Image (cartoon, rainbow, N blue to C red):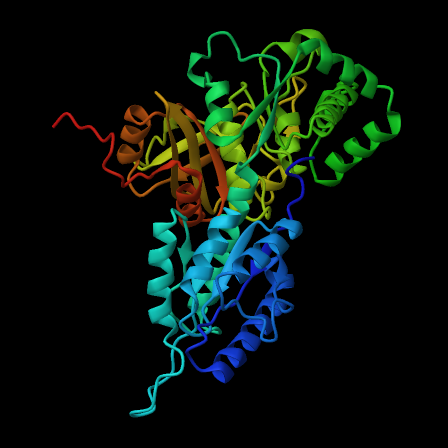
Length: 467
């Protein structure tokens, strides 16, 4: 699948200015490279190095930028890390970044104490100011970590966050979404501009006619071994699938059919009509099946909400694929907690999110019934209006609330009326994407690279009050 390669390839290009001390810059470079090789396994990236660029393995001259760019293109790097081992060579840094058009991270190790009247040997912070100004002149979007020690918690945390940003950008660019059938007729709120998504962002929609999908599902019904394997995995996860009866094979075939279509057409996400096609033709809803696709690494949105599928892709990438996302309705306010809202849908939440000790089951209609785990969640909504595209992101945490059907989470926010106004007057609808953890900073930074308007509950835009 086109974006199924979730490996992040990071080009690591240390730089120095020749006028500054050579020995100290070289030693700092060795320490940085050693740290990068150490972090590759723990932070899940593949480093692409330039040790063969010259005797020092440091970017020092403008013409070397083209040599490095060629190597990075061949390696298909997804992002660049350019540590300034002393002042650095701003002309080469800017040219390299311009050539590659990938997320760029600028950082330099904290400079040592001046030795009296001797010439300072590094001035890496000073060089960061120079390089970032030239990057802006070249129109290059970049990220940076403040001048700090290599082993400091600041570096560790923000370097990991940059990798997540790069993962979001990689997943978003060139995204292909399988669109299963058409949107439900009454759902004008999920309309999208297909041509605009392609022209602005390179996002392709791949239509799947109902007849094609139903034929694939019928074919999968003959694949007994695959059906039994999928159903066994559901049982092993702790779900009760007995209410389905013999329809359990239909559910498994539906899921296998959609996975087959996505793989055949190089799609990494699915947006699916779920109201009539499956129920009328197969006697089973698509709800739980779509949630299970999320658990299997394929973000899937119901009610043919293509914008929700896009947000799901961004959410899972921001989490570095450590957790699935889910698509929910904003439905009702908590009866006792004025800052809590019910995130609910009729059964498509990933089974791996089920609340500990909860008894989850699949209904005879194919819906998943279970509450999901409490904890911190990021809530997102990607949407557009009149040619402008926005990404809302905020955080909340799960709280106790009344029992209800389907899948659900009572989410407490810092100020629900503020959120509600945002969804009323922002270009959003009642559908949101949720994912465990706080990923707002990563999403905000990724929006800078992707040309999206980042929006949050605290952003004053679109806020309206009668008073």
